Image 1: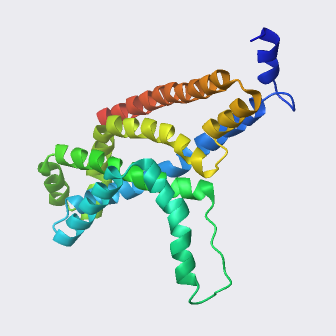
Image 2: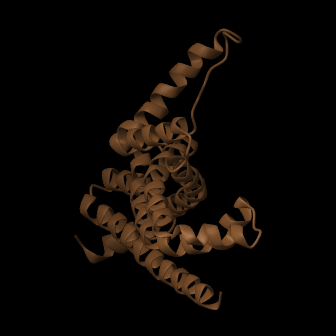
Image 3: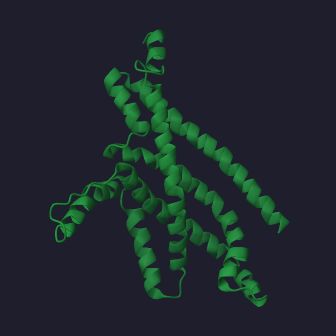
Length: 239
């Protein structure tokens, strides 16, 4: 491939594809960042449910993680993106027969990735909960703290520090899983790279760029999470 053609393909503007790739990277990062807080929140409460004294809560939490850890991510995405509109269409026909249901690919990806991420994050949180001695809870209660205050002031800071390495792995998996949403039309990194590859016939070039983008995001994430972990360690030492 001539060197000039490479720079033309990677240029900005109508003759190049860098602007499309950059847009895809932004969508990838936004999708991952939008998924993260939802997945963490659900995962935290699923972990609480797994160690609840109520059998029905433990059963529901275990079923949740079994389903979303057991199903392939792509199957889950297809079920939600293609199956959910059909189900909702049948339900809504009883009230508004003329209504149609469309699922936004970004929203569908965010919901499905949140469900998958939370199922793995819940196991990380559960292991962290079990690593905290029961004496920490009893110590909080003995000085007059409520269950919520004990959780927030005593347990949660330790929980985050213990769970953080595992959650970092979940985050890296989430970044990679965003590429799955390309199959339902979301213009993220992999889809835009695939479009460029098909149009220009330079598949190796653009898929290599997509690979480098995901690798770069992983490296940046590793530096960021290392800084956060050091910060958590300093706060814990000051307590």
